[in-house]
Image (cartoon, rainbow, N blue to C red):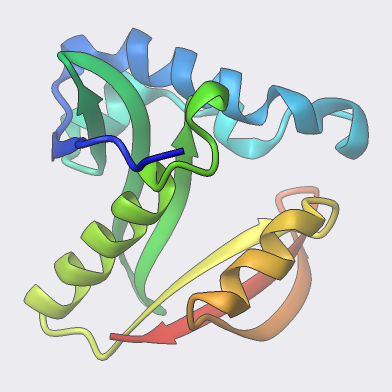
Length: 152
């Protein structure tokens, strides 16, 4: 499938419902595997958008991807990357990751980090393929997480 021409922009509070719907659709397949909703399904996207932490990927005026990113004491953090299931494998998620990497560089960071649930095994194959290196595994907020970092 050819990569769609998505545009990435800062989310507005009015995007919260579309962002939550996109994230829920993207992560729903993991609920049974993890035994409960993945953490991104529990986030308050209106509050996160109000804090300037959410970006959306749009295609023909429709929200098709969501990125939650922000600075922490450990560096520049990608909290959530999601694309609508019908667009998995088309480059929407990668476009959001590249956007985040550019944001980190633009803010003076030398690296970016993220984590995935240990049961999301697909991500543990994908992230190393695009330059992320695993550096930690630990329980956090009741989830078993695998942490990755990439130099930008």
